[in-house]
Length: 114
Image 1 (cartoon, rainbow, N blue to C red):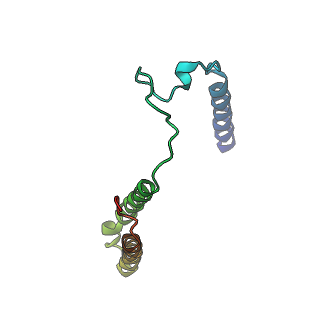
Image 2: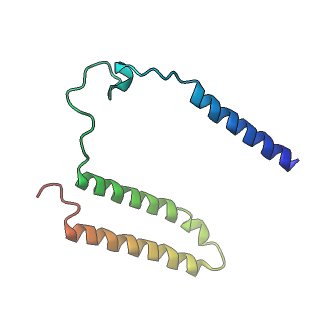
Image 3: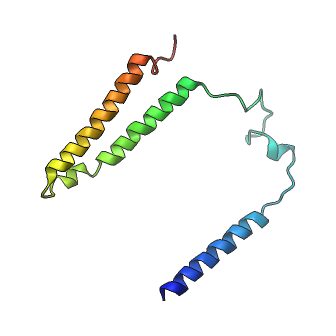
């Protein structure tokens, strides 16, 4: 039973992969290659480099967003018999991320203007 389900899912996956490569038309034109899809001509190149400061702030946002996702089950874990280990792990995550934020702050990574 499990072997037939695995065979069926892998066969369906392979069929969908091959169809997704064959279905799209492969004739690129100027409208498909343009960086904008809103109907007007671009003002400049869309391949400009990102600001490193913007990239660092975005990475910090993702880290703290991940912190929220990691700490979300902590209130439910408090009802476990060994809630002290939950508190230790949650505190270590918070301390590590706070130290990283302080390091970025003191190094000037959060400054937009110099």
